[in-house]
Amino acid sequence: MTPQEQEAIARMRDRWFAGGSAFDIAPATWRDLLPAQDGLLSETTLLALAGQAFQVACSPAAPAAFRSVVQLPELALPTLPAQARVYFRIALKECATNLQVGTLLDFLAGRGYAVHPLDWMPSSGDMDVPAAYAPWADWVASRDAGGPASADELTEDNWDDHYPASRRAALSRLRRRDADAARALLEKKVAAETAEKRLRLVQVLEIGLGEGDVPFLQALSSDRSGKIKTFAASMLARLSVGAGDEERQKEDAAELADFFETRTGLLRRRRSILPKKLKTGAQERRRQGLFDACSLSALAVQLGLSEAELVEQWSFNSVTSVDTMFVALAVRTASDATVIRLADAVSAAGGEALTLSGEIVPRLPRQIASDLLLQAFRSLAVGSLVELEESIPVFSFMDDATALALPLTRTIIETSVGQEDLKGKRERARGLRLLAYATTQSAARALLDRLVTAGVSPADAALSFLQLGSMLSPNEHATPE
Image 1 (tube, rainbow, N blue to C red):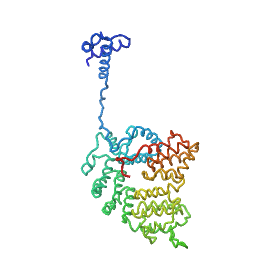
Image 2: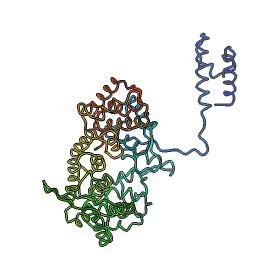
Image 3: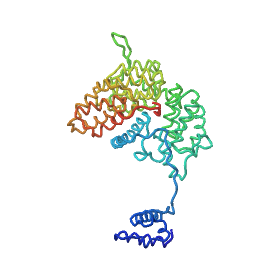
Image 4: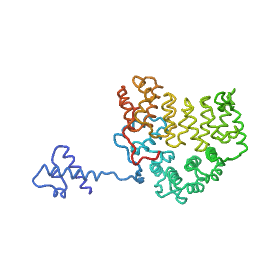
C-alpha cells in the first residue's frame, strides 16, 4: 500500500467518525469499484475496502529475532470431547502432585483419549510422561534446542537426533518387538547419558526380562549411579543371578535371617516365619538396610526354604512395617511365579496386609490383579484403602453392583453432606479418585447418581474424576493396560 493510500484511509476514518461520507476523498482507483447511483451501498463498499486494506497494512511484521517452531505433532489418541475437557480441567486442579497428574493422564489414555494441549502440556525433556505424550514432550524440548526431533525409528546412528521422551518410548517399543536389539542399542549408547536419563532408559529392561540380559545387567552393577546399581541387582535377583560381591550378599542375608524365627502351629503343624522383637532403633535401622541390600532368594536360602515356601510361610499382619519391607523385597527381586504366590498369600491373610496390594499389582497378570484389588476394596476401611491411590495401576475392573455395595461408597455417602473436617474431606476426595479409576463407565454413572441423590452437589470438584469416567468408554484407541 502506498503512503498516499494510507493517508486517504486515515482521512476517510476521520470523516466516518464525524458521521459524514468519505466518497469524495477516497482514492480514485477505489471509486471506480463502487456501485453507481447508490450512495448507501457505495459507502458500505468503501468501508469494507478500507477495513480490509487497513487490516493488511497494519498486520504486525515478524520481529527481527523471530524463530519458527515446528507444528505441534498430533498424538495417536483423539482429544477429549469438549464437555469432558471441562471436567478434566477441574480434576487437574485437584491433583496435588505430579504423580497424581500422571495417574489421571494414564486413566484417560486407558479409555483411549488424550488431553487438549491448551489444558495440559508436558515440561521440556520430561521422560516420565505417559508414552502417548512423548511427541509433545519432544516438541517442547525442540523449542529449546532450536530444531525438531528425528521422526525416524531409533537407531545407533540417529540416537542423538531423538529427544529424551521419544527415545525412551521408542526403546520400549523396540524392546517389546525385539528384546535383544533394544538391549544391544542400550549397551552402545546409554553410557553417554546423565545418571537420571540412564536410569530411565535401562528401566525398559523390565519389559521381556530374560537370561540374555544377564551380562549387561552385571555390567550395570558397577555403574557410577547407586540407583542403577540397585536396579541392576534387583533385575538379576529376579533371574536368580547374584550381583557384585556374592560373599557379602550371603553374609547380609544370613544376618537378616537372624531377625526372624520359625514357629510351628500346634494343631495344623503349619510353619510360620515371624519377626523377632527388637529392642533398639539401631536394630530396626539395620534390619531395614539389610532388606534393601538382600534378595528374596538369598533370604530364603538362609532360612532353609525356597522362594515360594518363604512367601507361603510368611506370617502377615504380625508387624505391619516388616510386612511392608518383605513385600517390597519380593516385588523387587522375586520371579514372576513367586510374586503370584505372594498375591495369594496376601489375599489369604487379609486384614492390613491388603494395604500392600498396590505394591504387588504392577507385576501381576490382569485377572489376578483385579481379584486382589477387588478384595482390598471390599475389605479395607476408607483410611487404609486410600493409601493405595498412588500405587495401583489404572484399569477399570468394577461393575455397578460391586461399586455401589462397597464400604468405601457407603462411607463417602455418609460423610459427603455437611462434612467440615479437613482430613475427612481429603479422604473422601482420594476415595472418589480411586473409585473413578477402578470403575467402568456404567458404574461411574451409577455412583454419581447415588451421590447426587444423597445430597452431594454435582458441582463438587471432588466428583470431577467420576464425571470424567462416566463420559468416557474405552474405544479402539485405548492404550494397553
